[in-house]
Structures are given as structure tokens and as C-alpha cells.
Image (cartoon, rainbow over all chains, first blue to last red; front, side, top):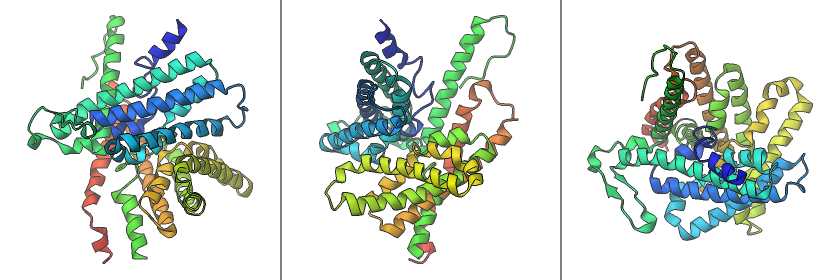
Length: 219
Length: 198
């Protein structure tokens, strides 16, 4: 059952974005709409799965001293595959994500999992770990995007690649476009992390009820 | 020369890599908690970004394009950057051990700084020539350094401030970054071409 645990830990307990605090740049830059976040998440999951699989398969062949360049070549190969596939089949999404597709190479999550996990574990566990971490990353992107997209545009689930204009939640004249800018990315992630900390603190406080300190400020 | 000044100012202020494009968050958050380490990292980033812009431009235009290997861009660039960083590290170690002690530990970290690969890809995508690419890389580095040092100075003061428990550290840093980004949005109203009479 350990393979299942490797899968589950990435989803929330060791969520790469909210707990390990890795891969911040694509998280904030591409979570402008749910569709963009989902696209970025799936692309990164694919790369993570491929790199974990191959690093784990080759872990006995790769010399210890040059392992980082080897990992980078494996990762860059999968990123190139994703880049070409996306520009062929989802051109609108590819245009919106832009430079962040080749930048998956330097997404710390992928190199960190190759180094910390896949290089030391067997193939099954590595694949499960890659899948779990990838889905955890996608989940984090979707959470941020579900907050940002409605505030910025007044609609949700806008998907031009599939010819779907999204569901209107409120008139666009009340929307705050700033939230889809980088400003909104920094701010949303900051408040979401503070909220997660707040919930964790409160849980801890409830556990040791003897503590008389004041409740942490909620967001 | 005026065009170069426009590129330089626009990459430092208007299209700041950290605040307007969100590239390089990890080193930004990671080393901005101490003023001294932040200045060391800032110097290393300026150096590597300008050099990487020059080298990747040459690789793209004299190696990949003539051989029709454009699809290898990502693989080629990241390897060039990784090799370049290693090389710089070795050269600095031989030439100036005191500079190495200052910059040395930050250099390996720079390989995974998205801004370095980002500036290389953006130079090619925007069709810059060699000189423009170097200026855009240097400007990007200076812009990153500016924001990093400003943030480090802010965080040193913040360490002694009474802050709500949930916001301590990472969340508050992000929210302050958001406010800096908002301030930098003001620069997007700048008409740089007009300023330099182009």
C-alpha cells in the first residue's frame, strides 16, 4: 500500500505549492483563469510523470556527480514534447501561457522530485509520487484560479480553446481586472497561504485547549 | 543608443521580471530575508543574466537556426545556462577568491532562476539583435536586483514588527510584493519612446 501513500501525500499533506512552497512563478503567473491553471497543471503533471519515470529507470546508470545535468536533459525533453503538442492542439492556451511553457524546465517542483525522490526510489513509487505531486500542483492552481477569475472578469470557466465563453456570475463592469495582473497573483497566494496557516494554527490550538493565547486573526 | 536606453529602462521599470512577469520568485523569497545575502545574489543575477542573454542569442542564431534545430531551443538553452553558470563559478574561483566567497554559493542557485531562461527565450521571441539582447538581459538583471534589495531592506525592518501569526513570513512577503508590483504598475504609464524622442 506504500505506493498509494506516495500518491496521496502530494495532494494536500505535502502539497508542492501550499506546503513545500515550490514552483511559485508558474503558480502565480498562470492561475488567471481556471482553464489556464488546468492547462498549466496538466502540462506540468505530464512532465513530472515522465521525468520521475525516466530518472527512476536510469537511477543506477546516472553517475552521481553529473546527475543534475542528466535530470535537466530528461526534463527539458519532456517539456519540448509538451510545448510542441500544445502549440499544435491547443494554440490559444499555448499563446496565453507563452513563455511559461518552456519555463516548466526550471519549475523547482520537477527538479526537486527528481533529486529528492525518483533518484532514490523504485519505478512504481516514483510514478505515483510524480502523479500525486502533479495533481497537487494542479489543485493549487485551480484553487487560486477559482478565486481570481471571477473577481477579475465576472465569469468563470472561460475556455476559448473549446469555444465556451464561461458562466457569468456578475456584470463585467463590477470586475476588478487588477486581480488577473501579477499584483493579484501575489496577493491571492499571500492571503490563501495565510488562511491555510490560520486554519492549521486554530486546529493546533483546539488540540491543546489549555493554551490561553488569543485566537489568530482570520482572513 | 536611444533604443538601447529604452530597452534598458523598460526592462528595469516597466517590464520588471519579478513584478510584471513573475519570474524568479523562488530566489526572491529565498534570499530576501537578509540584506547582505540579497546584495550578493543581486550582483550574481545581473552578471549571469547579461552573459546568458549574449551566449543564448549566439547559440540560437549561429547554431540552431542554420541547422534547422529550432525545436531544441529549450534543451539547448537550459544546458548552455547550466554550463555557463558552472564555468563562471570556476573562473571566479581562480580569479578572485574573495569575490567567490561573496557570490559563490548563489551561483548554482541561479540555474533554476526562471528569469535567466525567461530572458533568453523572450530575447529570441521578440526578435532582438545581439546588442539589444545584451541590454535586455542586463536591464532584466538590474530590475531584479533593484526589487530584491528593496525587499531585503523591508524585511529586515519587518522582523521586529508585531505581525499576526498566520501572516508571519511567507504570506506577508507575498502581500508586500503585491504592493510593490502595484507601485511599479505606475511605470507602465511611462511613454519611454516619447521620453527619448524616438
